[in-house]
Length: 140
Image (tube, rainbow, N blue to C red; front, side, top):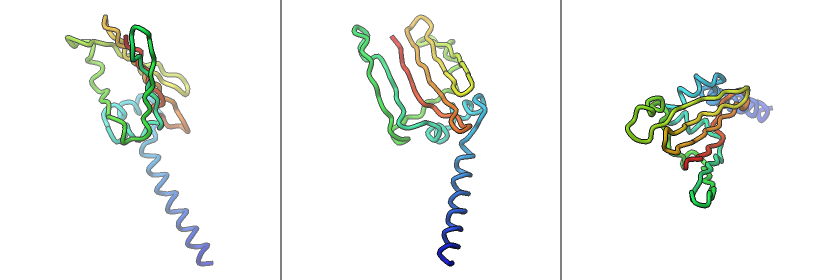
């Protein structure tokens, strides 16, 4: 009986901690999610589906595509998206930002202005929470 009671309490306490951790990082509205994702490093790291795949063109002459895999949050380097809307006014490396949102997916696109920049961040809604799931850097 003591074992049962101890096990029951352990499961209850464990589930409470798991729920509170998940619920603080779980945002079902993409715009709200992305505002937090853009500026909060810890939130960003916790809302990436690892392993995260980044594909990029490593050789422009042959269009060779390579892949980098981020296995966990320790390998990930924070990207501050909060200033992206101002990028079209820069002197160099100008780009525009567009967001396409669908039922379960969203695409955050950086498209260069006369410079070949093209980066697509793919987000997916999984169990009512948004996550970064893929990055495609098609910059030329």
